[in-house]
Length: 552
Image (tube, rainbow, N blue to C red; front, top):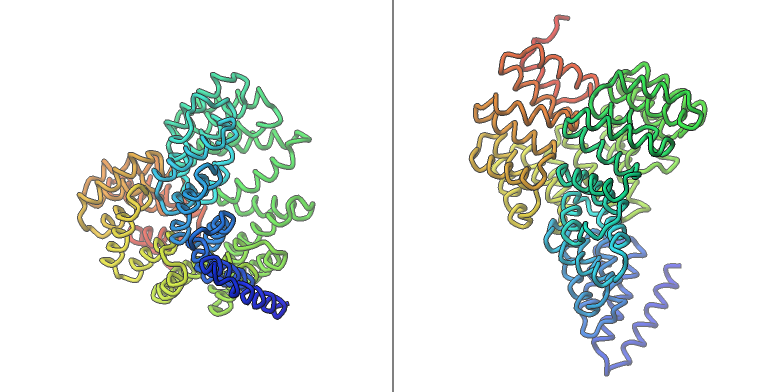
């Protein structure tokens, strides 16, 4: 097949060469052919570069420019995509698709205001119902990994006053994912005002109020959702109780739902997941084993049984389960866990090969594989190797935000703190609207006692944009603790942990509690977090600094 493709390409190139009166068209056609040949062999970088060459040729067809932008996005060559997007918009100023993809590129690069401008044009040019336009744009924006930017851009692009209840709920969900609870609540309440029988709006309100620690309001909204739509929102109350950390009550509600013929199987699943999350190993193992026997989502059951085997130290059993999922095509999640087990067994080459295999037939997975390998190396005290891998990958994907971010983190882990800070600072200058970068730079400064006033300003600025983000709340608490204000640190750390139950936040929260003489509370926080994540090196290291190791 390869030789046939080459022959056709050669013939086409020869034909193009005869059209001396159209040198620009000849160059564009040749570049397009070379690009498609590169895609055929999995060389995304060359494909993107050649398509960019074709797109920038004078009078390049609109179809070529569009294809060039799509290839650059699929191949994660985002700076190239940023060069092509305005070409398409200039060539086709009336194209809603061109405006939509320009917004996607902007979100990928953390340019939230530019994304809002493009999405606003996309809505205007589409000339359709704003709710439908929102749904299409939200789907496109969801692939960018920029939750806050997606919400902010769409909120600015579309007037909520023109949306019906389902569209308001969709926008409210985006606000919730972007950790802007105040906006999410306003949107949920607006949806209820438009349609008092909207169970989805009540369920959204329940999630928002639970995250805002309004337990009574959250439970009332959850019960309203369940009353309006008993089948569609059967689990609204139970999940709200879980979010409020009222685990025993949630367990009883799930047990009640087990008796319902329609809800029973899903209740069994959620009980298994709850037991796993809470560190109740015996119950989780029993429930997932039963689901595996009955064939209720066997892939999920097998994955969690593998995780439980890991917790018991039975690495071979865990690997066998993960590998079965890999062989069945389960993808990166199973591969990552299998690679972790292999690394724990001292099989480094096999672990890295397990991840590499994902990109063999999926060239678009190259970046994800490289990031997974770098994280695995970092977790196993090989920061130098991780950094070299990231540098190599960045050479093939220049300007890739995810790789650049991971590289800055890895520099810190390698002990090159000043370089890490400089890298985060450079990224922040490139993407000044990105609260995640504000937080990363602020936290790194605070954690190393460097320029604490600036760290505080950066973290506060990030929280002003996304005020309910647990990672940024954790940074605020940690920065306050680092400058000796432990009492002021407690509130943001407490809220951060209640929002996320994250192990690193638990380590910070417990340390601050201990420093304030509340040692019993610190022990409780650490014990519960350790039950949920018994392999956390950070948590065990924190506990080890304050609690003596038990005698043999």
